Image (cartoon, rainbow, N blue to C red; front, side):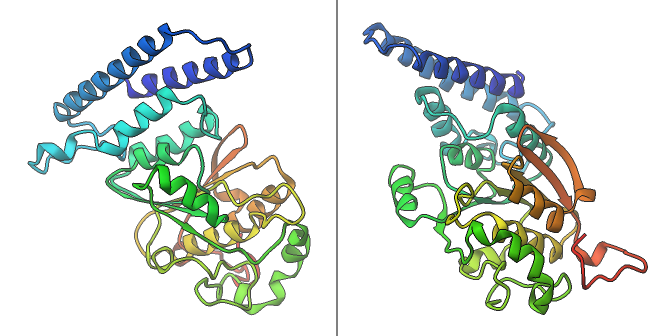
Length: 307
């Protein structure tokens, strides 16, 4: 059984549904029978996947990796995975990213054990991300407290927090041009919790964010398409600081969406660094950022540039 192929089939079907939504809507009673059969087929497929996983030594997802602990239940699909299958099979709403973009993150998840996965943004793809990492920690950060309550009302099993931002998109150029004048924004001194002097630092996140070493960070929020929106400057800067402060082995994988926008691209090149970019698709860039302790710069002034 090829899980990547199954995911491809689901997205192909969803794109077909989107096209169908453009046609006049007519009520067809037989569709409910088709829908019931589809759900049944998906659930049976999930059970077959579970059976396949228990019989192999090769990990497939971060979320479905088998480590032979002796507990068969550890290899079974989790409730959130089954919820995701049913949700995306029965909803006309698809994730914000396309298949090519999602596949980049999926490849990383497949290679990792249960991960610490931080996602800036709470939306129609949240259930998908959580289902790909059910035995790890997946945490969503959202700018709109009302939207957090709305989503959690329907999906209480997701972990999400409201996060305030201190910036506006209209300030982006000024923030990028002047951050070097504030010592607490410098690569060697930057920190997040309580760093009120550096406006790019996200100081209002829950302690859980500061106290966790994140393996993957997805930046797909906050809003950044009108002047009064918070923009993603703070999220990009803060992701860079968290990655540089990593104490464990390996790199921090950072995924930035909407890279076609000027501000996202400029701040990515300023703080995430083009030399750390390892992959891209559509409007998504993937960075592998090493800990600052593991980077040698020779004669460069480490206090001036993140890159």
